Length: 121
Image (cartoon, rainbow, N blue to C red; front, side, top):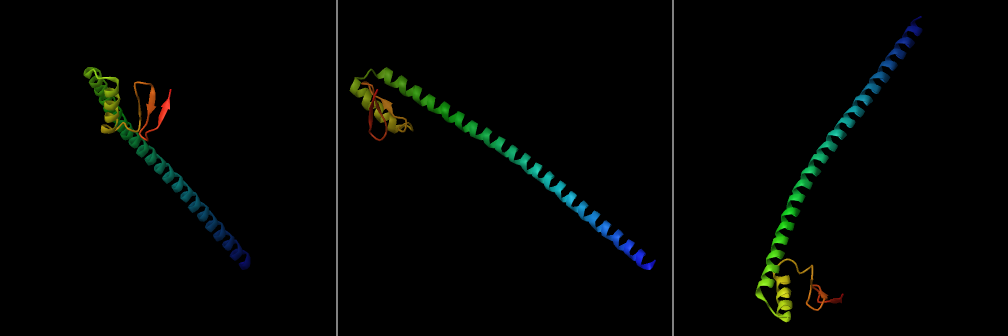
């Protein structure tokens, strides 16, 4: 009987240890899932704030660039320059303002970019 009682006790302890191990694994998995969700929420919040800031900067630059382009076009229109003077003035403005990467079209329909290449329309 003693052997059987010890065997039953050993099996009971084994079941308890196995149950505790399963419980620890379940708690760990739950904690990992909870932390993963918290990290994902924080990343979403950070990306949203980043997109709002980027949108604000882009909107500000777009408005600024359109204001500059509007001022330039009004200035060219008011000066009543010859075709060659307009080409030189627009070329100067392209380098004076941050638009030299865009390029421009001269009065003959040639498209000029900052690397001095010409493209015919």
